[in-house]
Length: 253
Ligand code: ZN
Ligand code: FE
Image 1 (cartoon, rainbow, N blue to C red):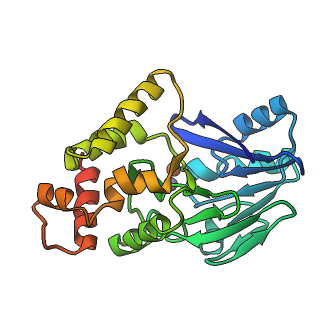
Image 2: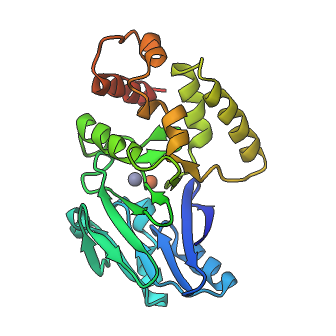
């Protein structure tokens, strides 16, 4: 599977997957229809499928123009179907999308929005997390509860460590600055942030990450970590309480 990504709408990441032997192309979300169509034209590809992670405008506003110009099928969360224009099929937790070239598992990961989903390609070892899990961060909790988001992130952290992860925004550098304030002794985090700063200087994207790397350096997956707990003075609190504190600190960072 070939994966291309580019920035649009300031900091959204448009993602295109291309399966060479079947010549099938999938887009994750539709942040910018025109930019996506131009990119497809440049690559001489036709779009087959668009997988929508959640209803926010910066992930869906391209649907209308893509629908006008292609025959792609649009798939998205059933819980948000009234808020998303143009879905051809709706899906739920544990649904498996079987295409002629890959299987895609639907993971319900609410919190950022109530219906947010992540798309997991187990054979390809790929996951697309939308605005739920970011590299070195997580989405703001707009509609769900802290508990919901905590469990969604636990679910994502539990898939195989070598799964490559792509998210909906290039927020990694800013997330890294925050992460260093709560986990400053983490050598892996320090090294990775240095790498990210140099990538961003060259205008390169910081994705993909991997689930294993995020487990080692993303504070929102590390509520159990003793040194983060010590820094927050929450040695005996529940993991969920530590997560809630981290999210609050980040909201005000
Ligand atoms: Zn969003
Ligand atoms: Fe977004």
